[in-house]
Figure 1: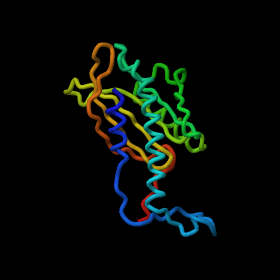
Figure 2: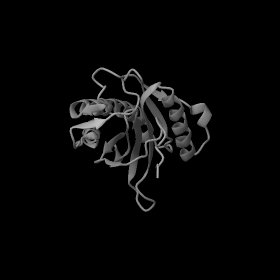
Figure 3: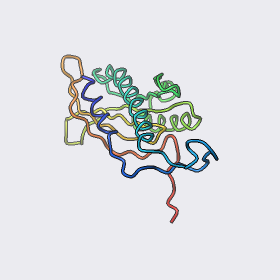
Figure 4: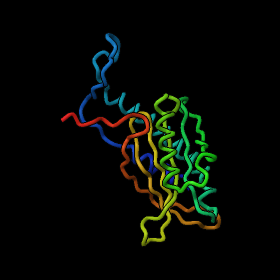
Length: 192
């Protein structure tokens, strides 16, 4: 069941980088392997592989935990998880007492603000908010949305259709949508 989602997440992060090197940010060391201010394709691939593996770990754990909410006939409310800075510990962001009685959209906004605060203190490597909805108002197709972001610059919304069969969620092929990178860093303003 998780196999399709895992392969789709891997495909999402697979891409080809053109050129031989990528310039680094300011504040480079005066000597050492990073003194030239560039990262090779191999180094960049390693960085992206780390982000990919950590997001897979986070998404698998969060989806596994959230599945009980999906199969429950009661209305589903959003929930959030974070991957701690050790790169392996996944924790649920528990703000239940603060968001009790709030509509789903407001809860999502609260989770985003909480992630922004925790991420900027350097306490987490990645975060995800899970919620359900419908593809459109005219459709009965239910979807799970995994809104995720990683400190290394990877973000997106994974939209996965599902049906409840025998008390379990049966997943269909996911679709990835772009999501602005917001929780870990501020977007750069256009200099023009």
